[in-house]
Image (tube, rainbow, N blue to C red):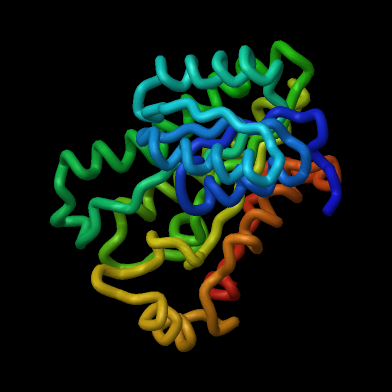
Length: 253
C-alpha cells in the first residue's frame, strides 16, 4: 500500500455508512487524517473506531448537510482539529421520492433536493472557501450513473438531482481550477451497499437480478469505487478537471 495521502487532511460527508465510510477508511490507510460527517453520531463513531483500530486518525463531526451553518462548522472543526483541509469527498446522499414524476410528493422532493443538491452545493462552498484561501485542494463528489448518464422509470426525482450533481461538479471545476482546486466526480452504478437492495431483496436476490441487467454481470465492489475516488483525489490525477467517472459495469455504455 502506498502512502499517497501522508500528511494530508481529508473530509468525507456521508462518512458513517456505505461509500463514505469505505472512502474514509481507504484515505486513512493511505496516510490521511480524516474527518467524517453525517447526521447520526453512532455510525460516525463506528467509522472512527474502524479507522483508529487500523492505526489511522479520525474525527467524527455530526452534521446535517441541509443546514449551511452545520457545513461551515464542519470545515472549521476539521481545520481546527487536523490542521488543514486538502481533500474533500462529498458522499452524502439519499434515494427517495420514488414513483412516476406525476405522483412525486412535494415534501419528499424538497428533502431530496435539500440533501443531494443543495447540501452538495454548500458543502463545496465552504470547502472551496478554505481551500481557496490556503493554496488549493481537491474535491471529489459522489454522483450516480442514474442522471446525466442514464434514466429509469419511477425515479425521475432522484435522477434529476444526480444529473444536477454531475453538471454542478463540472461547472465548479471550471470556476475554481484557477484557484488551485481540482473538482471531479465519480458516478457509480449498483454497488454492494444497502442502497442497491430493493425492498425485501437479499444480496443473493440482487446478484441474480444484476447478473442479467449489468453487462459485467455483478454488483460493484466498494473497493472498486474507493480506488476511483482516491485516484481522482491523488496527484496521479493532476490533469483531471471536471471529470465524471462512471463505474457501473457497462450499464451506461
